[in-house]
Amino acid sequence: MSEEKLEIQGTVLESSKGIFRVKLENDHVVIGYLSGKMKMYKIRVLPGDSVTMEISPYDLSKGRITRRERTSP
Image 1: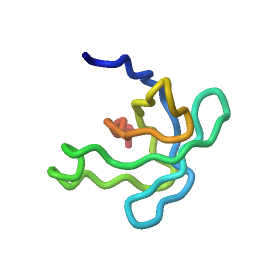
Image 2: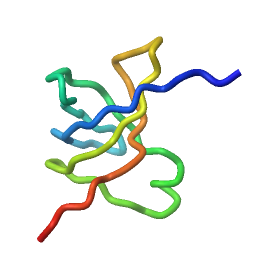
Image 3: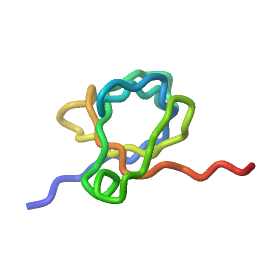
């Protein structure tokens, strides 16, 4: 039984030891952590980066960062 995840865009405000504060499109601030693939491939996420998060509909205060969006130079 798979549950539906909400995918939403956000911007990283600050980071500390693998825990991130992310401001979502709707101006809510949630706690985020990196997904396993991002840890495995050592993808770095810094404050100011745009990210995509998966949030469970049961707990809207925490989410998993699944993608860091590319920034054009």
